[in-house]
Image (cartoon, rainbow over all chains, first blue to last red; front, side, top):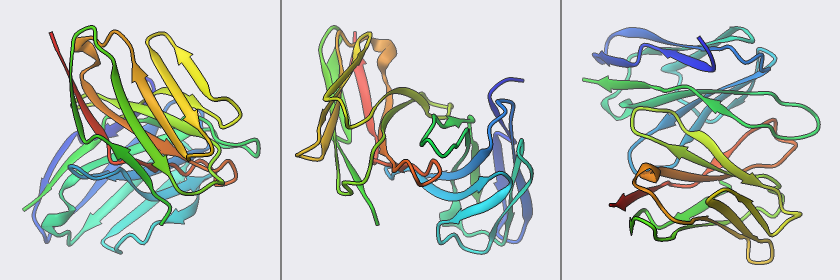
Length: 115
Length: 113
């Protein structure tokens, strides 16, 4: 596997279910991100992890819970979601240094449908 | 909320024509402006990026024009091809924000043969 991989690619869940999204980056990067992509809206940054430490939580509801066990893996735990949470969830990674921004590499996303 | 405003929402261009997508930003501290291309079923991929110390950057058929005083930047696709049909996102960030990108709303480009 190369780049950024995400599993599952599609997920349908009820409002009372608990599920997890997984992201893995094979690029040796030190930062990972979760984004939400809804139709006709900008990509919304949800969480940022630098060196496994969460550095950004963009006012995301507590029903979304991120976990970063190491610099290569990122999870998004989901519980008691709402239908409006249906969207494409994208994971990205980048190499962040004091010198500034580097390219973010995105995975293919998980298409989530909440019934 | 720091915003990046992108237009148009959708664009139809004939094969061989020029596609132009515009973005405007508010925060003068932004110092990195990438464009991402997204095909259906795929994640966004970096297409081309510019920093404010230059007014134009060209890579093949893709050119970014940057106007610092107007706080605007645009993507020009020359000789547009049906394979360029995708959604394009502009973005902006500050170098000291650990990679945090602010994205525009996206432009759905369709190039007709």
